[in-house]
Image 1 (tube, rainbow, N blue to C red):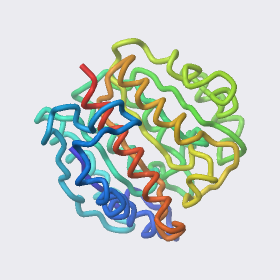
Image 2 (cartoon, rainbow, N blue to C red):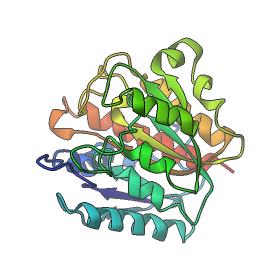
Image 3 (cartoon, helix red, strand yellow):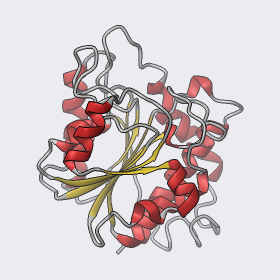
Length: 281
């Protein structure tokens, strides 16, 4: 089940409203393919729903408001818990990279889960500008959740907000770092091999994990990122090796789109996530 959340925990003095446009931009970009769900999809090796029509529902957006940080977190977590109670697989469209924190929290009664993060950055700041739940902190907060059994962070490159202290904290926790260069050299198995077979996995995809040549509309453009094919191979690989228990896509910034290609790429990533979920046991 898909739902959108435009705002999470925005830093003081910042405006995340551009990211709040992402869910509707992705929906609009997917409309051309909506009539083709029974057609062959070469990314997936068959029709999207694999002979299981009606298995995916878009529940729309939950109400969020800029700088209502605690309220936004509560509503995102509650919606995630509601979807998991059905049972169903929650798919969250953000929003900046703070919205995964309450999304992860929503799995508290459905653990243990592993997290596969596709991102240029490790997001391990304990706090920034006095906020502990902002977009620099999702993996730090996830590491504190008892139901999160481990994490693999893939696509890492260049420089971000992490200092030596954050690197050491992540390594002490046991996070597996996989740089973008390792994926380019070794393939996606460089990341997938760290995920235990049969584990329940939440995939969190920050759009800056992909190369800005194909995903330019993000907050922090960094060359050398993953290709579209590497990203969908990671998603499909998790579905085959383990079980995708949840998926989120964040940090899309529609105001920087070029001819709709940014939203189209994000829509295709979403399609591949749905296809992988449908095909898993």
